[in-house]
Length: 172
Image 1 (cartoon, one colour):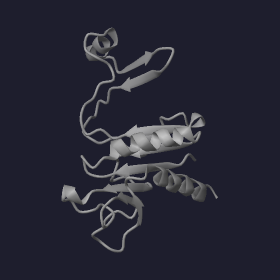
Image 2: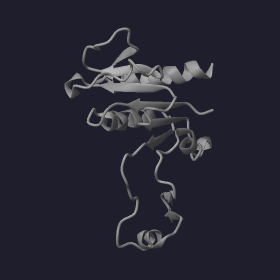
Image 3: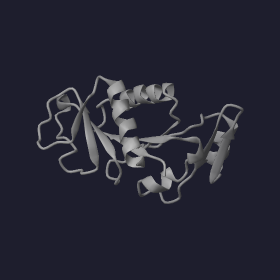
Image 4: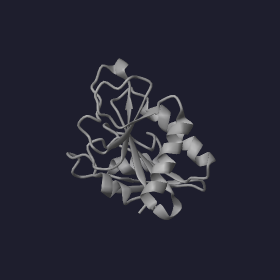
């Protein structure tokens, strides 16, 4: 089973900025990273005016865009009333080509997570009610004790070391 670790936090906390740093550092260490983001809004991989956009808009249930460099499959969901299921989305990855999957969001799902906490946002930390949070990346004092392991938010290499140590610990 491929290791999965998520980053969770309210919007505006810097999850994506941190993830960009983590992915680059992991890539530099030879780790093949998959990335899954939970979007709370509609999105398009294609652009209006292109043939594939027009075909999908006309009613195609699945649209596969392919080039020499990459391919992407868009699937239209008929029952758009529920959030996507984390396990169902993880099953879509070609895990033979990955060493680790980093997830952004899916904060209500049961899986190992690192919380990004910023006191300036004025929101309570998630770790106090989520036992799946294994660490908190922050530059602030944590307001609720006990708390999970605290990681330095501005030290991406230390967070990568924690992630790789967690992977090694779970594989043994």
